Length: 449
Ligand SMILES: Cc1cc2nc3c(=O)[nH]c(=O)nc-3n(C[C@H](O)[C@H](O)[C@H](O)COP(=O)(O)OP(=O)(O)OC[C@H]3O[C@@H](n4cnc5c(N)ncnc54)[C@H](O)[C@@H]3O)c2cc1C
Image (cartoon, rainbow, N blue to C red; front, top):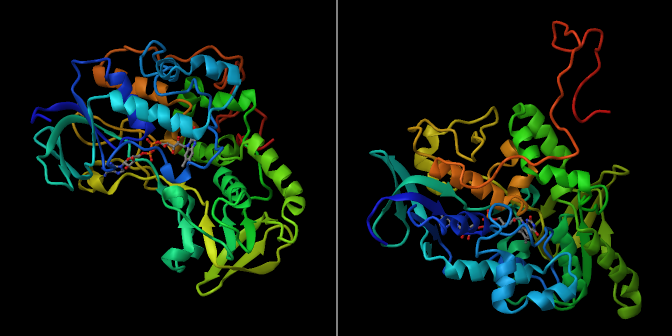
């Protein structure tokens, strides 16, 4: 690395910043460098469970949505690996998570501006430039703009805070090392895709032979990901742009309402799980069949051997107690800016609940000069909608960011014609003082019939 000033410094190299880097690789005059604390590229290695599949089409790769001729596409990966024709014959609507991770690693290996083993410790704004300091001994980096791609952090439910480290394990670390839960009472907490995959793994004996398995979820049932066409329209530039223009309160309501469009369980996984449960007593005579406990809110966990889990059934309102030696937390993730941005805290504009305000081009609203931007990827669920934390629109978002950085519409990012019109058409109705049509007094929340 030279001491020259960069146009863009990327912090974190997960798929989202990798996508920005893959587009910028085609712009040699733009000086960019990306830094990650990991020793090498690796996509969620702790959740590379055998048989796990992507919940997104392979066409929603790092670049194709913005630049289908870009050499870093999934299709070019298949061609270069000599796998295109075998792939086409496999007729797989969803590729494996392992293959997607391999594709991402293949791209990462080709990009010269990625630097691993370099954890960004702090970022300050000095003399018109961002100054990045690192945990490792190395000179600081100076850049005109930033792109924050530090991802998400595992969520620890408050009830589990008192449990000692070894007895609770977030699923994101499950495959980091060999594990054996033989003879233990295992409780999976959290009823989304990860919980379903972990239950399948336990039933397949991936981590020994537990004495018992329980799967607890707060949701009223084990609910499917909604992959139907109109729901998929939430993952389009037109919807994201409409969403971004809505008032804060309405955006919050919508994100809650649309949960199953991004956080449900893949229908194929649900089917496989149900069939495994059905066959379990015949395949494993004498072993207790896993217990599925939906609608349970976890109130408290008493640490000890075994632990006692106090839950409340939201269906009949009764309290229950369950014993467990090992908790597997499939409790999702938290979003938030990384600690290295703390020196810039007071420069950022926040919404009514203290979340950073994010502009249309995924740039944080801050009090610095207009020609200095702090872009964020994966922080905009409340500003840009549920698509922001998914792979679906990552190449489009990268194109929006790169266009903004270049100051020109290099990539086509316009909305595409859809049969569905999100925004209001013009109305000739006369308005009353409250802004509604005269004589109409109903509650017009978007979530009520
Ligand atoms: C198991 C799993 C499966 C998923 N499957 C799908 C799917 O099928 N479809 C879909 O649409 N979405 C999926 N997602 C959601 C989403 O696509 C992924 O979480 C994705 O990895 C997010 O990418 P990211 O770049 O934001 O973050 P990450 O992949 O988490 O990468 C962030 C990187 O930042 C680095 N970092 C953090 N802090 C620093 C620092 N201070 N200095 C340097 N480096 C730092 C970390 O080391 C890490 O490498 C999945 C998520 C999980 C957890």
